[in-house]
Length: 433
Image (cartoon, rainbow, N blue to C red; front, side, top):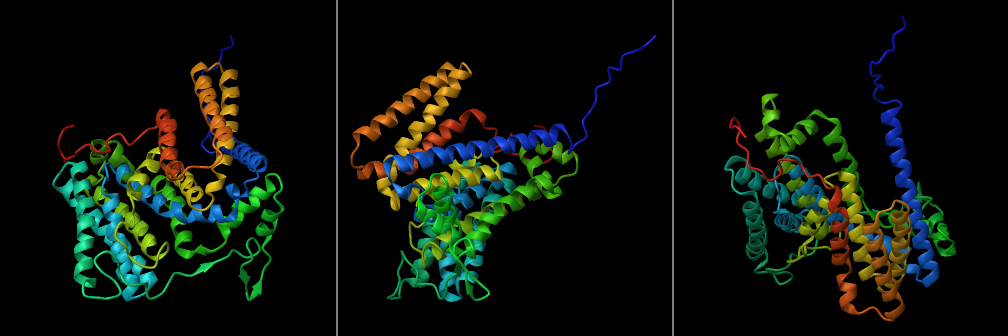
């Protein structure tokens, strides 16, 4: 008598199922990116607004996104260990003040390290208040914002109040700057004394379909690069590796997801949260240091301009994942760059969004999603009307583009968000929860 084997067959990790799913996801993301680039290229050619993918716009977007990305990473590290960090803005202010002071006294690199230390100080204060004394995390964060604002003003009055080249709202200029470079071959950088060709710049000037856009975007991302920018971007995949591939990362994430269970397995939850918040402060201080040293050459009051709160928005958009934070910051940085560098290209964005809405409409109808189809149709109609009726972009509209972009991004991301389960929840070791 024959029998049928009904034992479930498990696929080994790293083969077949898991690898196939990861591969198919990457292919899908690549396909989406190519379609978006093609639509953007069509919008550029249609409106003859070359600035929408120019090297100038892309380079400005990169420089503008870095502080926001670092602020988002600061929020990610804090919430992954289970603590809300509303005080990122204050930590950034501390970072910008200490960074500006250090760059004036000792040079740019030391200033950057001092900016990171200033942010870490803010993170440590937040950790003492929320982890050790169990102070409400929102109240502690707001207090740090106030402390950063008025503490920096007090320090400025103390150090610069009697000087003629500075004052309570601004530090003296930095002693040295962080070097910048062009990538050889791609953007004409030096290679062992040889001035290499600017391949991407040549391609950008051809204005070909898609290829011209690749040249402009690539040229902007590989020319006039600060080493601080390179380090900041490299911290994103490094954070991803630490959080998901190391024992420390597993313990930190478990402290934000299930601290009681982690405690029973021997994890020192409070110690891990201290570490997470100090790292969070380091990211915020790095962001402030870049604003004072790379984006400018001195500390200036109001330099952070709410970027700490925008960073929290990118963290939410990125679904508490490092690469998602990078994507959200890039989107906001691009919107800021359009406002500053290529304001006349905003109508091209209207056309691009109309095309995207059209694609979403077709896909929604194909999948029989009526609500999504109606939303896409309404959005496409509004932006098409704006393109046809607005001949000159008003100042108020140009200024609001980054903030409208943030609202749209958060609204579109709200259906797929999964924050750490215990982020913002007070915790005491040994207590039943």
